[in-house]
Length: 439
Image (cartoon, rainbow, N blue to C red; front, side, top):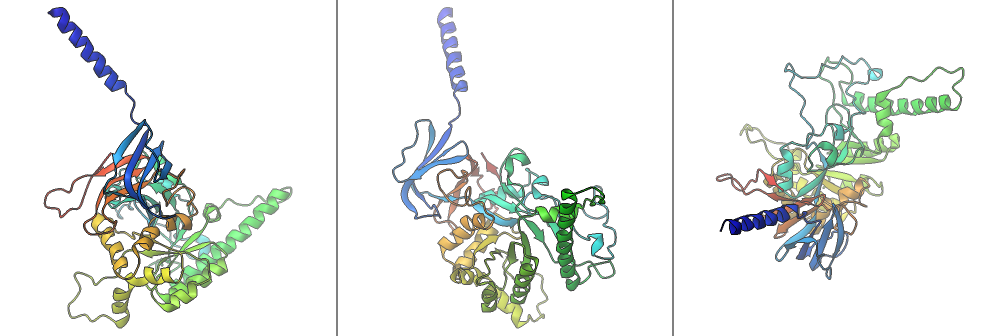
């Protein structure tokens, strides 16, 4: 009897050891699903195979490999992972003034030579905090990647393309430098240069004049340094020169006209962001033929919740509120390349409602999906690795039950770098807002 028990115990231990020793699946296959490739026609019922973080194959007649973990996609739709084209997800907020750890106050600037409000050398990828809770809410809404930018000052710094999951920041960064975010921030009255919009624009112009001179001096010194004073190192100009493109703000049609002309003067590849008045025919006229893509904010103008009931809004404010959500449809019909960005919207349902509002105001669902997938990838020059479901691209997908952006649609899972994440069920009494993602 004792020998029999011993043999049973040994057999159990062997089975447990075998179970523990079995490797995790090296591939994932989602079969019998509707697949929206974005770059081509949708596949009514097909299979997509993921291996080692990449899309291995996709098509109607693809058979799941023997070593794959197979997911039954009956009733599911597979989309490319959504991309936020301009975000601060993962970027820490600055410490409040007077608190421990707050950055020292910037010295008063008397002119452009002081380089006020400029941190052009900072890269967003170096600031990322992988434990930012906003990543979870973004994944719940189907986002898998984001172009994140520092957001302080005039020359804010260089954006990075990141995936929204990873054990450490280094695991998340896909492209370290996307471009330089420029904002038209002015200093408070009496706080120094630049204190007016004209001064900000003059300062930006001067930075690029200085950069041209800096390049010329460095080239001359490199060619023959003997007898020539060594050029001073300028990290602000180095950061500007390193940037592949610039992002300029433009909301009203007159701002769009101004920034289009300014970009042509600076001779820099440019993306405009904002586009609140993209619906205006004058905006479209200034953008046509300029080869200048735009990013449309999903934060549609709304009346403040705590507004004075006796306050009367101007006709222009009322028009913006009514027509801003139609801007994407207008831009799409005009053939202006555009993508969406979250603009500070962090909650899952708010992001979904914002996209749905653009659809309700004339944008087709296919165009809305493209504006959050392939279009941002094309705008930033990374369409060879993201934005559509094609063989060889990064395995970033969102799988839904129902059409994406519909009120009743449920995100079943997101896959980032080939790793599956499932939104946690909503906590009781919270109206369906998911707060946790689990692998």
